[in-house]
Amino acid sequence: MANRNKGARARSRKRRPSKTGARQGEGARQSPSTQTPPRGERARARGRSSPPRAGSLLTDRLAVGERPRAPWHPLPLSELLILIGAIGAVVGLLRRESGLTLMLVGLGAVLIGTVEVTLREHLSGYRSQTVILTLLPVIALYTVVELIVRPPAAVSLVLLVLAAVIALVLFKRLRARFLQARRERTFAAKR
Image (cartoon, rainbow, N blue to C red; front, side, top):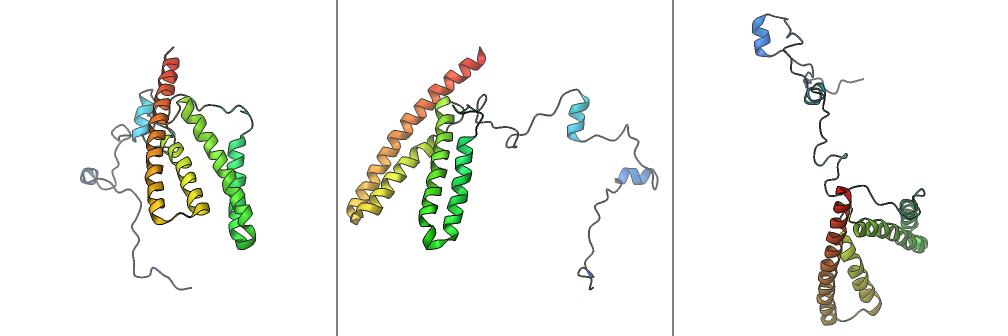
């Protein structure tokens, strides 16, 4: 078997002694008391655990409190609906012509599950889902009108402006509703 990396030399991952350690004596290592422990170990040594960094999987800086539970709490119905809908959409997509109905039903199931979760989080003040909840009905309305009615270009442009106005009104109302729910949630958490 031929050696692929015959000419290239790999870089060693072994930690090399610092220049000061090399000057003190060849092969001399630093004593454990002079080595600085890694960042997480220093915090634990002081008796505190290091806080999770922003943007890590452990924190959600936009959320307040615990995630709201569904009325059917022990059963993850929305998540199952999203999973089954995604599987149905992929199978329908792979079947091409014969799977169009399955794909549309799968996408509908994903949409219903997603809307339920986002609406529950938004209305409880847990996390703002204003943009998603604003755009979904506007896109649905615009798409249905364009696909079913097929208006001329001038009417389509007017419809686009109307959709933008509807989106603006929806955004303002949904944002106000979220801020009110967020105030109630933070007030209840302080008690």
